[in-house]
Length: 228
Image 1 (spheres, helix red, strand yellow):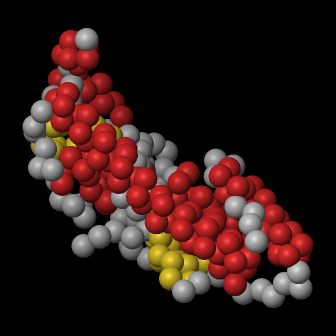
Image 2 (tube, helix red, strand yellow):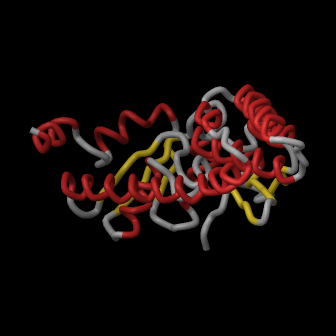
């Protein structure tokens, strides 16, 4: 079973409502720029890569619902749409880069999702390979916040590394921090990890130091010696 936080097909966009996780897995329909703005502003979607993907696909949805008299009108609509979406959460600044002609615009925006997944998998595989070289088998690892499929178009960045370790059977245990105040680790990372079923624990903030130094995540001197 795979986790899809963003679904886009034939001009229709839905996103997994992260405010309701992990109790409910419900999808929101994004039919307009205002729908996308609210979803980003209210944190129904979060994580800079995921915000950018949702923003781009929101514009793709909106463009296909409108008719334009000329390219100038299209360009102005795209510009104002991105400005509105970026204002919802300024971390998604890369949304402003997509200002192309109509025939190129849709293919570019729709390709962002596949491109992000491909990049995530490369990050995961390269990161896992380096960790395996450094630490060998049976890796115990701690991750903060949520950096997986829910924060990207799919697969994840830092959590993607852990996912690649799991795929290679090199992962022993995962600790995910609770990450206050939204508890992205306790709610979202724990929810996401359950889809690929490694052994994991949610780590309260006051126990993180002990987990890092005493529970086998790593011992600073050992890492220093390996690196040197």
